[in-house]
Image 1 (cartoon, helix red, strand yellow):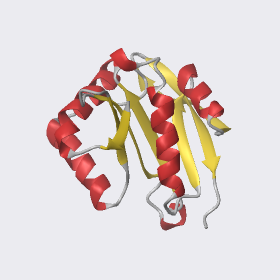
Image 2: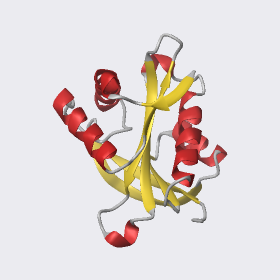
Image 3: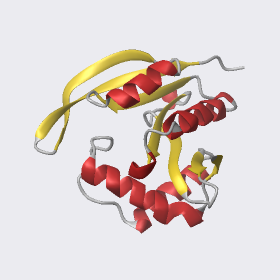
Image 4: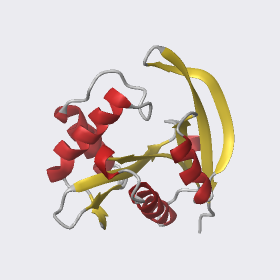
Length: 166
């Protein structure tokens, strides 16, 4: 597995990963599939704001998953807090790719002015919760029935990793 920044060439693969998650999981609380144009705008905003978008690639160069972070909230007082996302292709899950991506994302955040990395996770996503706990994230709270998807109310939990700014 190769970990490196994602380029615009991978945007169709990112689109497929996003849309699979939207259609079949509660990793995203979106209802409608994204368009390639929307993913391009998302990617360009990350690049313009010097936010990492890193990918895990197999030996053939196929994107297996990606990770990124962005602002936790838009207010200036939150400028040292980032909310992260990690997505892995369905057929690549269970191989440690999520852990590798999140570990790389944490290393990237440590190089930047990030003091607090936040994971906002569907409360039923025990795989993601265990991953965050293994990597040192702490449970910070739960908001019951804060989302609605697939005809049911969803609870969200917050996990946080703190590290000092130099």
